[in-house]
Image 1 (tube, rainbow, N blue to C red):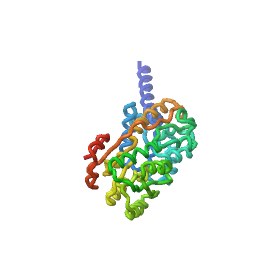
Image 2: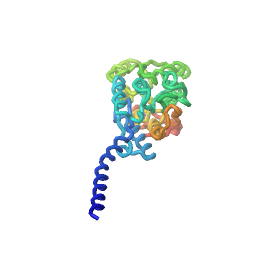
Image 3: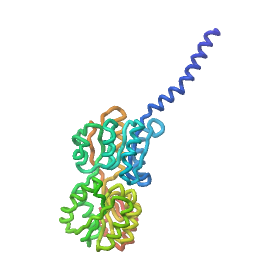
Image 4: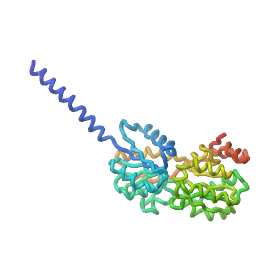
Length: 331
């Protein structure tokens, strides 16, 4: 009887000793999900929240059955290579990458870690050699695309003129080194010609160039501004909006965050919706599907926002019929 009890005790003791090892092994097996944002934590807060919400809806909880590692470039593209290398060193199951420059940097560092892109525009994936096709990208990349085509640029400018009919001279703030901005600038001449708009491009590659750009804008007689969606401007949107206000110029932006921060109006894709949708691709990849077999998807939800408080501050009266077009009016 004593021997039986002794054997049971040894068995229990051995099991108890094994539990910590098992727990550590389970922790080591927790998949790491990398997130590379081109902007700052503050600028990306809604996108990150949407991604986490999408993951929760599929049963993934950060710190429980996944581990999310974030890296933020703060609008400085020179940081992207280093940040990608840091994430790859963590041996992640996949990396979610915002912006075209971000995915180019990530693809240069790794062709094996699955990459989910959010922010590529137009035909960038194929044109840049990142994907074989939209239906079957091949390789280690898939994700969601933003449009920078003539249709979207024309829509933004038409809406800007709908809100402010007197426009004929337009200042354009963009970073030509950003592929998305470069695509917009390519189609801008034909769109401006159709709308009979005279425009001038003010190049902003760094935050320090913002003041100089707006000083140059103040020296000419512009009626409105078109602000591109380069990560530099998104990261420093509070400064952009303040400078536009000081110049007393109505401006159209690509993302709703500008309007919520005091910009006049925006028209563009619902970026947080794309991050939420990215959770489904994370789920598929974690369950064994190859990113190259998952089609690249375009944004399918676009929204118009108008800030009436800003309109009043600029002395603008926006027609009731135009306000009815808006998805959201901030008063």
